[in-house]
Amino acid sequence: MADFSELNLNPSVLAAVHEAGYKTPTPIQAMAIPPALEGRDVLGIAQTGTGKTASFVLPMITALTSGRARARMPRSLVLAPTRELASQVAESFNIYAKNQKLKMCLLIGGVAFGEQMAMTDRGVDVLIATPGRLLDHFERGRLLLSGVSIMVVDEADRMLDMGFIPDVERIFRLTPFTRQTLFFSATMPPEIERITNEFLSNPARVEIAKQATVADNIEQSAKMIQPARRDMEFKEKRNLLRETISDRGDRITNAIIFCNRKSDVDILLRSMRAHKFDCSALHGDLDQSIRTRVLSEFRDGGKRFLIASDVAARGLDIPIVSHVINFDVPVNPEDYVHRIGRTGRAGRKGEAITLLAPGDRKKLKEIETLTGCEIRIDSAAGEAGLTTGKPPVADPGRKSSNKSRSGDKRQSNKEFRQRRGRNAAVAVADTESDGNWEHIPAFLKRNLEGRVSP
Ligand code: AMP
Image: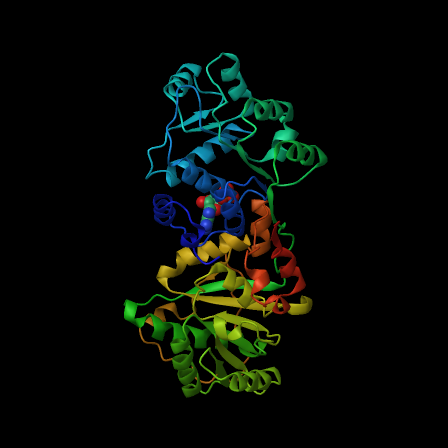
């Protein structure tokens, strides 16, 4: 899924998503939003950190755009296991519904009943609540759940752990059976399976595979250029690329250098050749026969560097490489996963380096969200030199590498994942259809398995 605009969200919801800075839906969003917008029940099996909140908040807001709230009869309900989670959902709701006139009320412990009652008495479109507090209000006769047309259960397995399942079942029974249900759980223990069988009707089952071991054998890092002017970015990146290659010396057996634009592939090819680098190029304008020839030459070791665009590389049998260098940060985070999947195959060590311009931080963040890995930003060796016209590095001639920069203060990818203790999704809705699976190593494939039932 390339863009949120393809998801049929209400235009003002879409505007709020863009204003929040999100362009590309995460896998759970790409897979859960379309069936939810069709009015289907959704069973989402996904962890926190996958972007699951927006996957139910966005269709909810879209569905509530027309219609008005009646006193004490919320039109939709979100159940969350803890105050903190309920508050986070409410925050998301405020961000994405900022262009709508929807009334939201948060019913959680620790807040005076009076205030909450005054709000529900006036009528709310969205009620976000923990189960116990919701039932308190119901028992005081201050709420009727018979007007709920959409109900969300978030983190159902945590509700189970906390002993809330009887409350959740009771709440389900208080809502109309015609309601739409969006149900999320990180895991599916039998008790959760049972209540989904009882309360969901023919749900679209959307599952984001656990991120067990994201490419632990691929070392990921990035380097930032510091151009004095915007129009110097391309030149500075070319300098940084040569530096990066020469730093690594003969550790680079062979490398693919990815550019976003085919015109840049051509320019970079000429520049690299002028600096005596042994390289060839692959882009979409080349004849299939030339592409095949370029590839087999690269595979046979006839060339050390291959400069390529994503389109050109897609669907081709790209050989194993020791290094992937992203000359540009890919526009789609999923392309990053495809690109770096060319290295570190069959358990071998690989390295992926991404060159960044100052405006690329947001794109890098999106990649981090998608993959659940923090990408270390190394200081560029000749940072000062690069901006002050330090002479470019000449033909590297596979010189021995100088010092490693992995002593960076930021955490390694592995440590970062452990610290976060969460499973992020790297599944992409369209991965299976782009014919690229054969290039992806098994350990990444496992993480790319996102499924939606028919
Ligand atoms: P959640 O799993 O809903 O707790 O979301 C995890 C984080 O991902 C939150 O910080 C969101 O702001 C962020 N996020 C949600 N959707 C996207 C998206 N489409 N692209 C990038 N980040 C997102």
